[in-house]
Length: 123
Image (cartoon, rainbow, N blue to C red; front, side, top):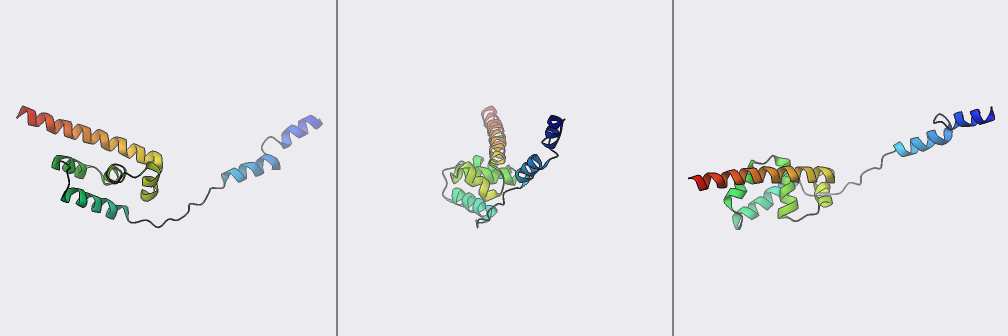
């Protein structure tokens, strides 16, 4: 009977495991970091890229057609060359979300630009 009592006290209802679960449930607090507004950073980068840019105007137009978050990720990751973790920090999203937005944006850009090129060739 002592064996049965011992098993029931450690089966999740007793203090040892309950306290452990409670400890694991506590979330870490995020440290606040002062960063510029992502929209301003992206718009500044786009203006600088557009002003004296070597970027094709068709690429700039395709970028402008992207959803705002995808455009921000493309600008921060590819034009400003930030790392995934830093881009995530600036935008307040997870690194996996940055990767997903970037993958979707590249797929959209590839489709848009390929379609444009095919239309030019057929004309």
